[in-house]
Image (cartoon, rainbow, N blue to C red):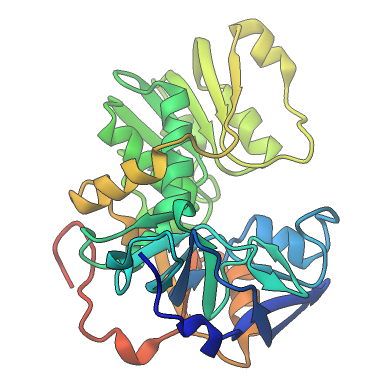
Length: 344
């Protein structure tokens, strides 16, 4: 089926552009023409990555695709408004999660989702028809990352210690419980984050002695979502013989106490991202109200000329797990919340 040809009317779009280290602006960009297998998405929500995008903002990833100027964003939800000639027209008007886009001229995409309109291949989107509030689609990539970590950890019937209750850590703890872990403990020095956690045992290492709080427990699995070597060293002390460590973040270098690994014959697993099908699995868990995706949506800002403020808060405010950027605030009043408790 063919599209309606509206793409010719909106070749320009507002987008968030990283111009150089610590330089962000809302700029007009040019979209590439829609190909026969592409869709045009009108963005309703996008989000800010406090890992990858923070490093890129500070100029710490000087390699493709993070070559300035670039459009960030791999957490975007919007409505399909146009389809290419070989795409079913029935997709028009439906919400989808978009991992990003390379459909721009004169600006790089890393990964290109922070734009008012997005041109992307139809096979790169994930439809959100059955999710009560499509905004929860923003959580698909972090949810899929956490799901992959928990899959690698093989948590069923095991005791799990999760270090860090940022967005991925919180989702990993919740998913570990869903996948059959018998006990989940979490450590987190920021009390607000700890309060959002669904872990059975919550420990703030700045307010209590971790050794006392975890006394009597030996864990089968340690999941790290902190990237802090001292925290990992601490966590290794509570693993049992032949325990498993899953590294759930991105680490420029590793520097941990090898003696604990040696004495306990620990196994180490690096989790890269997510596996094929994980985005759909997370979507189904959200649909079934078995995963509270909205738990991590702590802050929201409307996209405007002061967009740098939102990024700086996301990068520096420890209470900000996930900053949601609202591109169409006037059209969202009737959307219900997706909290698994059923509360609005």
